[in-house]
Length: 155
Image (cartoon, rainbow, N blue to C red; front, side):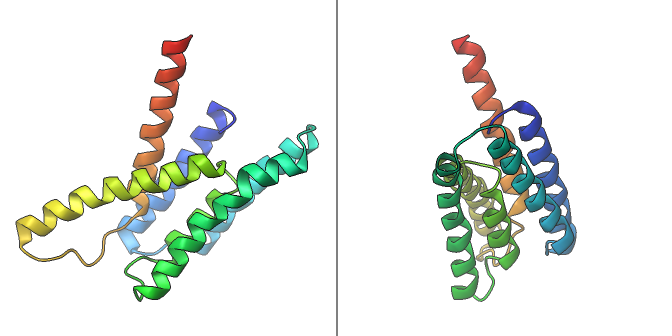
């Protein structure tokens, strides 16, 4: 992520999606499209400012694999993982270089697994579905704060 303003904008988008995911258990297409368009616009601005296309493509396009992985999981599990989660991660490929995107995915999965296991142990049965985007938003916030702390410690 290039700067703090982008990180804040991304967090706001993820927080809006998370709130919607908690309330409705689905993600609105317009909100997904708006966030994806904003990320794409940021990359176009970066390209216009002189960044090489091959460098941008190499940094961001491999991140689509995270979204495709979640879309495949949605298909295989008959939407135990939602299609909206996969679409969101495809769009996040416009926002984050692939290394950051996969770190975000793995952190969010870890954050989601812990409450899922605890709820399962308490209730004595498996948790069938939980909104995932709140964990993605939380993971983004934690990772961004950790990066800022590391930068401040190194400065």
